[in-house]
Image (cartoon, rainbow, N blue to C red; front, side, top):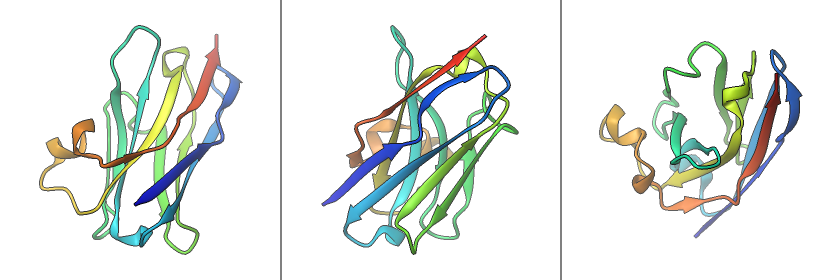
Length: 128
């Protein structure tokens, strides 16, 4: 069992930055692939970014590529999502998920159903 706790959300003006954290407890964190998803009001949850267990490779949604950076610190059992140049359309609740294996494809990374564990989410609001 893995417990995930997101933090770092808040209110920021367009063009600003935030860093989200997802702290994990429970089983060996380094053996989990991690993903960030977000859900805006009235919209479906959408993929944001992932980082794999093996090799730490990252993968981003086109909408955040070049602005968001995902990293992990296995010693601290934490993944970080650095979000720069934020836009109003980035406003959403951000969730991190974990799965106890590596991804079989880039497509699979983007599918929320793949993830076994989820955090409670953290609100990000970007004002124009």
